[in-house]
Image (cartoon, rainbow, N blue to C red; front, side):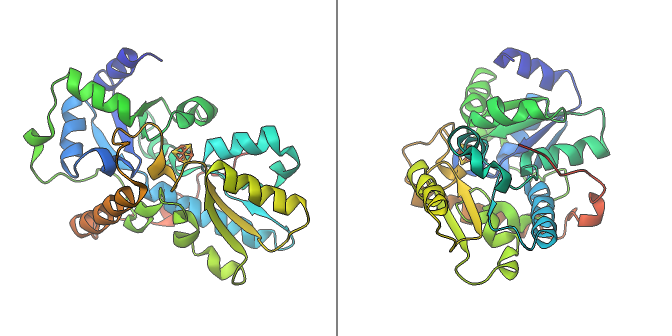
Length: 284
Ligand code: SF4
């Protein structure tokens, strides 16, 4: 879909913007919510409740498979594609659970079936490799494209210095998901493994090493929490501020998590019961 078609889709429909937490690296919170509404979105939401549901589904799946020798996290479509093409023998270990993006899109379609869901992404892999699998995702706009759209539509951050709030169910603590290890540290899966059995790593070379070690008989790790980009999604290629170091980006996400938690505490908190009837299973 061309960029203009995406803009038309936003303006002419009950469109919902689903923000990946990495947006905070490029845009100010909460100004971004007002900016997206000016663009034409009827609702602006974040992925946190989707991530909460993914955590819940991960724990259930792991508990139901006590004898499985390895589990590989699957929210990163680049990691999934890497396993499928280079390590087909490991496909069976990929967690057959959707990503927070797909989970949150399913939540939206459950509550507002006619809405159009647009994911704001830190990379192109989400658009090209993952979104086409799910009918619940109507379009993906990268953070780079979003900046271009705002410039084109003359929507300026400084004109939106008010209090704005997300429209959807939220679970603040998962806002650190885009940082390498965010999934393992927020999903409480530590309780399901012994100390030293979870490996958190990022970057192609490190991921390759983890897979090679497993192939060579090393069974130290039972759960691999993997993201393709350096530092995790905060190192995504479609983030505008590529000049910031990974440490600087991490700091921004932690600051955003802290600030936004104060602002949204107690508001529309999502509970598992709100979405436990949604099918979060997938296959690779
Ligand atoms: S780690 Fe990189 S490629 Fe993978 S989902 Fe995140 S931004 Fe996209």
